[in-house]
Amino acid sequence: MFAFVPIGTSIRPYRTAYANYVLIAINFLVFFFSYQWPHKGSPEVLREWAQQFMLTPVRPYIWQFVTYAFLHASIWHILGNMLFLYVFGRNVNDRLGNIGYISFYLAGAVFSSVGHVLVGGGPVLGASGAIAAVTGAYLVLFPQTMIIIFYWFIYFVDTINIPALYFIGIKLIFWDNVVERRMANVAYDAHLSGYAFGILTVLLMLGTGLIGSDTYDLWSILRQWNRRRRYHGVVAGGYDPFSPKVSKKVEAREVESGQRDKQKSDGVRQLRDEIVHRIAQRNMSEAAHRYLELMSLDREQLLPRQHLLDIANQLGSEDRHAEAAQAYEKFIAHYGTYEYIEQVELMLGILYGRYLGQTALAEKYLEAALGKLTEPGQIKMCRDELQRLQS
Image (cartoon, one colour):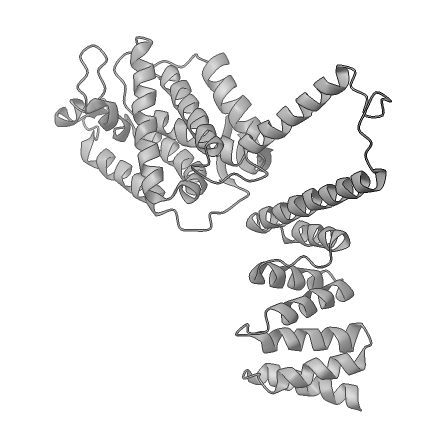
């Protein structure tokens, strides 16, 4: 017995994936209404009225290029497809928005069915072509995220994490649909057409700015690779930046200063992007580590309010008291109107009093918090701490 199934990813969408859930619900509703449950030993078949909505390449009707994607042949067929749609669709839905995502899904169904027809495939049904488009979109948007895989091999049952770039690119696209084309009644060419549509369409959307790009999507990775390729090409061509043939005299200090400023700016931008990415992955320990790197590069950098508070809390939980105190100080200095600022002052007072031995600062923040706290437990904690410091 062997099973190898994706059950989740390392990132969660910022917004509820309403469109994805609606598509899953519609697929299940259509399945239960169209599926002829077997009885008296009869095989599992579609009901007669539903068969006209399958895609029949010999004489296709225009609506079949969409309707076929909402029909399924068996309970295992739909369960497998909907699991993949749930795992990969939520974050794609988040990036494209509800209307954009539904439009993309339907377009993926059409494009994959056209590919199936062009290669001379037989009658087909199932959402796997549209889901392949969604999975291809996930590959482009989140190639460096981890896919959580459940595996079952004889007596061994466990989960492993595999980067999306490898799992989707190598396992799902290349191995399952190019190398292992052995299963009967599987529309491999519809799958490949769906993957091609999803990958190329989202790359085009990123390249034209239709959707925002970040440091971690496939478009940015390709651009970075192209920059490195061009650089190596210049070096291989014999370019020597120190050649005496340069005719224009340039002030060395100005050049060095400009290079340092650019390197610093690039480093700051990259670290800020990484912090946001790690927080989105709920990897707060790594986000805090990147924040400390950012502070060592430029102490004036300011994160968004919730990100800075999350980082400060994480540093405190890791017993990095001095760094946590500095982050809380920055938070109070820049976000003093925060509705729960007294709780931040209480935390800062406790850090200074219990762990950093700075009594004056501890009393300052504890007294500021005491005048605003409303929770009885926090008020008692604050008073007890002040009493301990003053005794």
